[in-house]
Image (cartoon, rainbow, N blue to C red; front, side, top):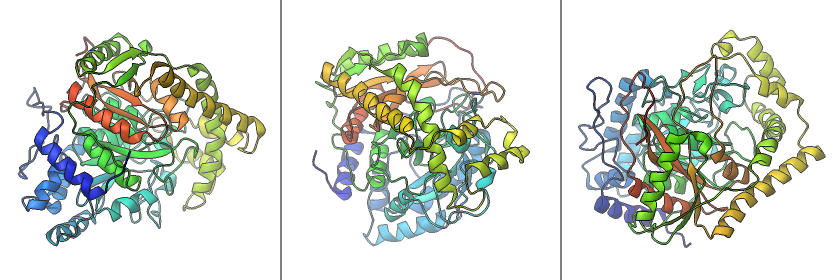
Length: 521
């Protein structure tokens, strides 16, 4: 697929977005006490406005980045005490926004993200701001330099609004962790139902977007940590193909699987952010209303996630067929073997990669010192005390060990074959599955209930995946996970935009304190 410049893509999406309207209509809160009004004095609804719409307003002078940034900062102050998604805001954000306004006035904008407020997961190095991975061990001096992806965002004119909470060490510390908890930020809550979990290590990014605390956010994933928080918080999350977004300056788990990626409330904003992060890759056809016609999609149902989720998938398949897609049921092979091999391989890779990262920061200099830090700091044990994964990683075979190398080679082969063979056998454009079950109740004593196999094939293979809102079980969002072949990110984003329009599944959170269970819809 041919590439177009960011300016051309932005202009095309502005026209398409303004003609088609926002991807989803805003649903009004049904109770007076739980909702959070997203309408503003800016003349836009933060829940539904897209980047192209914002850029059109900035271009005609009816909106400034300074006003938009100030509105998001006020919203963070008002709403974040309820959900605990944002660890800190950047005191230079107003200055960044003012610089963007000057570029807009002089016709010197840098592309579609110029002046757009972005939140960063707190495992992405950001100069001048603490970057902690949720751990007190890194809560001292901030990094001296930006991660490569932050440099790309700054060069594109984005406003770095602040940092989001995450599952400490990206959920790779304890055998039974609680997603969304860190010693630095405490527990992030799901904005839809506050006693429910936000899922995955990019929990703060997902929850912040659901609450409309920024226009876009950056997450990271090793296996599921972008797409599950996207699904469980009712937003869009894109895990790019491995290597398309630089991991330099991002706290690692495994160089063989880690990637940062964009999260947003709609696919258009996700695609525009991915274009910046990846250095110019673009997606065409994002506003094409007939983009599903003739597409073949394989539906991997995953009944283990429950009958309510399966009912959402049945309705999803019906709506995709109504739009002209062919939907056939599939079961990708080799999943049991992938589950057996992935964790042991990650242990070896984590030991190698975290030692290399810690050597660049003040604090513990290697994994052994980090384990000792956690043992001697009670605040690191206030939700769960375990660090079994750290201890197992310390004892794991080195990545030079032939047994490890055989494991990773088999993982790469089987994960890619699981997708490639399924797509070839059924002549598919993509494989679809449920992203997540309904959010479980957050419970430090029990830990997560998150055996969610849908993210693993693409995560281990290094192939792209994309979660878009699909429906609800009671008040709890369920996502549709789309995956495709290596470097087919642009095609996947186009397909995801078409599915988003057809499913029409998004609605604003109501910040309910709790909810029972019942029929899905």
